[in-house]
Length: 161
Image (cartoon, rainbow, N blue to C red):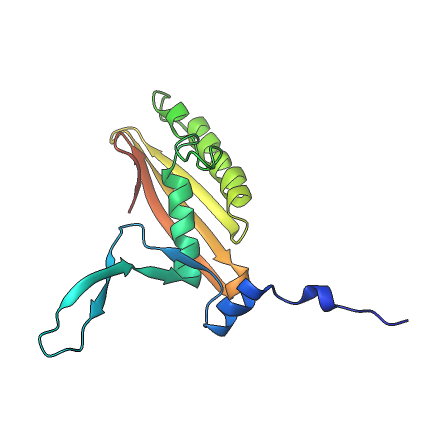
């Protein structure tokens, strides 16, 4: 009995990305512009298109977008993001820290399937009125492991350190 695996070939778009040397592509969050350099005698450097980021940086960018977006902000995807507003007037305690960590662990893994979360730690600091958040994760598709993202949740919102 023969088994055919023709349907496991990458799509044309995926194959194009692989041929170009990357698997994932995104646009920089800070909206930095690329540069077009004219090679003429009196040429100049002019702003070009938006800068691109690839693979690991594109996935990290996606994680940051999810963590800093509140559900409902993105019109075409109203479920994208995590709702930290519900913790705004809660007392800073171990219980609240647990619920923040649980929310990140459950929702971030669901909204960004390219990452595998290893650990989410949330520690409250009542004297500073903030939570320190440490997220450890990996990107198995790209063989990138032991990444971490440090952030703070305070009166200014979710701030990536």
